[in-house]
Image (cartoon, rainbow, N blue to C red; front, side, top):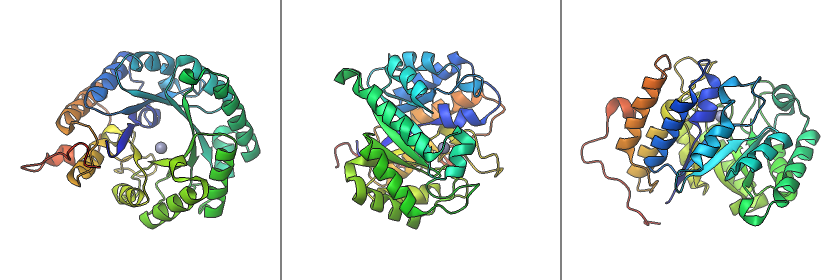
Length: 311
Ligand code: ZN
């Protein structure tokens, strides 16, 4: 596989819609999408159920997803307590969102930066106490890295320093996250290169992009140029953007697969089957708008997938 796609619709997409998707429908989505070849799915978040009732079934979804052969099961964790639950459930990967905008961090997670670093250190300790085979990969997601709805522009030096500190504390990786859809390709390329130079290329491999201002796939191109190999996306861009009607939320998985495969980058994903899964998810969420161009236009005549092992 040249590029690994991580499906985040079940977490980032669903947390932005009001109607609660039944657990059985979520399981059907996970199984169907895993069967298309999607290698990693973020199935939920271990936040208190009263804060996000939509994601209250995360433990059950992890247990289900773990039965699917070859699938990497990821979750979001807001703090040590969430991480302990995630470890207990046997997740393969967990990410803690660290808002580089401290104002956003306090508003969203009720934590200052020093308090966040403290949580990271405690989580690293909790992971290290597990036997090696039971240790999930622990990533610190640098959210609001490209700009913040509260603070505006974010100092790039601060993003780099935050990445360095997270790795010093023992996180396996950092991830770049354009939470607000403020990022542009020049910024993505520059920041990804700076962080990789600071912490090592193997410590920043993934990026999380939103398409709020239509820059999503352009930002993917910049991320690829900077050497990143894992990209988050959401089936149908589910969840939209509450501040920008008509804009998808996360970048659209179907369009991302098309972009990569058409350019000769192997994803391991069967796009026709993925479009069928999209139709199933739409049927389960009839009131939600799904986004994306490939689903509307169809695959071009003679479309060929990238060859495996092209390198
Ligand atoms: Zn997001």
